[in-house]
Length: 323
Ligand code: UT7
Image (tube, rainbow, N blue to C red; front, side):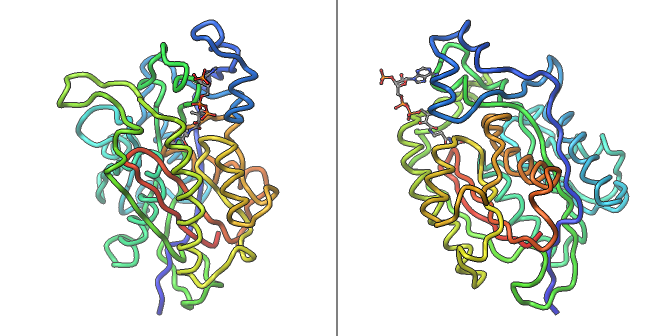
């Protein structure tokens, strides 16, 4: 018998406030035209004052539970991928656990920045396959607006806040690629590149810090590494580009998404795009795109979905799953 981690519910939450590119024209020397043409971003959502990452995560988690017909009592573990926790500790995941009214199971955060959700999916799958948990709530949630330097036009226009969640459940599979659930994963990191994308704060500095990025360098790595990791994950599953129904990429930059799809030989019609409306929501971007892809009627049961992401670390990876 092959145990598969199958998606049995997906949901998301976006804070109410929508911020169009034009708002940045009053803050830094930029233009709607520059932001659109260089990134594909048109608007993003920002959390309200006092609204925390766990607040967004709880709303997304509740939506995923509802979609799957589950209650919090059905869940064995909560994994939150985030780089913007409410506090240094305890984990945002324990805040979500309490917020959902769960007293059972275990909860922890996972930090791999923009690659956080592919790392979290892979970790949750490992817990399920090892028999440590039967149902895992996997969440990507961020309030990146709290890490932005409003004087740095090269970064402040790029990011947004939001959360997405899914319920992974252990189900019996046949061991073939026809199975629903996670079929393969490929993860990497390379700390030699830690200086090209980082936040210049944390417990060692006494401040939260701001995002610092050498955009052009990150762009170069992204285009090279994303197609490669997706190819490796597909190959591991015994599949090829022709089998892909949807690429669900990390939504950082439309040009990176398009270049990656081209390298993967997949037309843009088979790519889920949310970057225009959300900007880069770091670990939340893939679960947000999955949830919206389902809501739009694009992703359907049985579809082969390839997720891929890269971010600070550098950390990157890809997960192949059948919806
Ligand atoms: O999620 C984690 C992964 N992160 C990413 O994947 C981000 C990867 N990088 C990128 O998406 C792109 O590099 C950016 C969107 C950040 C920048 O686009 P670019 O085409 O690489 O532009 P650039 O950094 O080479 O800058 C081009 C010019 C520069 O001016 P000069 O030096 O040519 O005079 C910048 O100062 O654009 C300028 N610039 C801006 N101009 C107007 C940078 N930011 C802005 C801005 N508005 N907001």
